Image 1 (tube, helix red, strand yellow):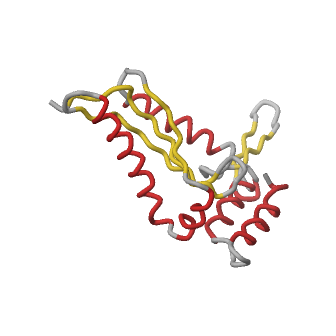
Image 2 (cartoon, rainbow, N blue to C red):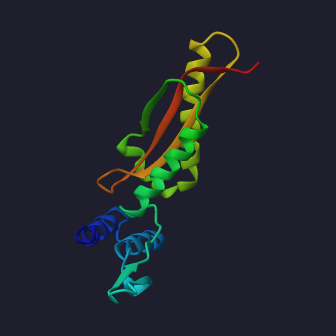
Length: 167
């Protein structure tokens, strides 16, 4: 990741027309780059038999970090699976055209509207498909970057293959 950060910053500056990158982005990346570095805190273990010492650097606990973020995702998924109904689910990804991405970049407050719109689409579909008064089980996660670290807002939706009777 360290090798690509400078290139990432240059690409972002071109996208932002040479304006500064948001400080939050720099901080998150630098935090992840320093994950496990004893310079930023550590715990030391010492064997009382042989006096051998082992230093373990503290983790950054950032969702962006490849190591810490993976653990966050695993823990989140485990928690969600305990709350889900034991039925079949579908996974879909909803994205927006590339031409609209900068609009969402400049108006981040509407990202929640994107997530809400996905719920409305799924609910509309199930209200038309399933007879009766039903509600679909739904979990949505908003991602703002693709795997190539380019700005690409999209919503991952996990929803039941059927509705929950409201009565």
